[in-house]
Amino acid sequence: MTITKLFHASTKALAFLVVFSFSSQTMANKYRVSGPFSQSNLSIYLIHGEDIIKNQRYLTLSEAMQQKKVKVHETSNVNQLSIENLSNSDHIYIQAGDIVKGGKQDRVFSTDMILQPQSGKIDIASFCVEQGRWNPRGNESSKEFHSSTKKLSSKELRLAARLNNNQSEVWSEVAKSQQKLGEKVGTDVKSKDSASSLQLTLENKKLAEKISAYKKELLPLLRGKKQVIGYAFAINGELNTADIYANQALLKKLWPSIIDSAATESVGEHNKDLQYKNPKAVAVLEWIDNTQKGKQTTQELKPGLKQDTIENETDVRFDTYSGSGKERKLYRQNYIRK
Image (cartoon, rainbow, N blue to C red; front, top):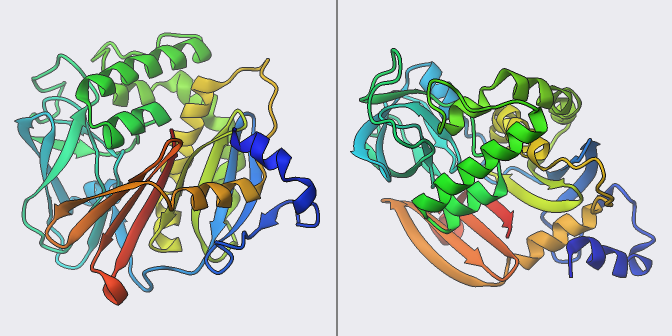
């Protein structure tokens, strides 16, 4: 049963609830969800709650690269790069799905990572989001990566890189995404500089024009709002992806790239003839609840930083954290509808 059908089946029992704000019994003490806030086929939900890690600020990878406070090194291993925090004081947050541009091939990180000041070189898992090139592109260095402005832009890509850990599947989904976007934009979105590069496709000017309406409507959503630590989104009436972060400050920094990625995916999935109803806020909390059960595995990303993966038939959740018990620090919970 889909989330939408599940919601309609329980509508009578929930009729007394406010349409735009709901807290389930299971999650009532933790989160409240508001929304949906919609533009075309994309609907955003805001997840309200108290900061999990208080009074801690992070640089995003994009910020750190712009400020030259981080180096991402080419290793000539397509599935592993090396990264180091050069700052004396800043903590740097890297998110699975962040694309880095340059090197011998553009890559995407497949795990989250927290870099402490003066971290030294740390290995981080990656996948290529470009094929064929193994030499410098233009004036770019083949030894390092110089920017990170885009994220993976489809659920299928996120699952291929983070759940299935399959390079061939990542390449296949890049090609599918390029084809979808080209059809919806009405022009070839592949770059002449490297036709297989997802990064260069996401920089396409015609695509930027397509997603501008989404950004204009949805980027201001966080203005003036307090205790918002996460979001979820639905495309064409189907829940897709959600994140809960360590604190609101981190969410605000990531917000432009979150909307950019979700809007890009929405353009690729747009169907003007499709009839659908957006899930209500209750469905987001039911979805979060559903990820509490499933097969769990734990991976050490680096000493002191771990990732739990909880998977069931319909959903997967990734928890990135350090410590345990009362000392446990949760940096991110990532939810993906399979």
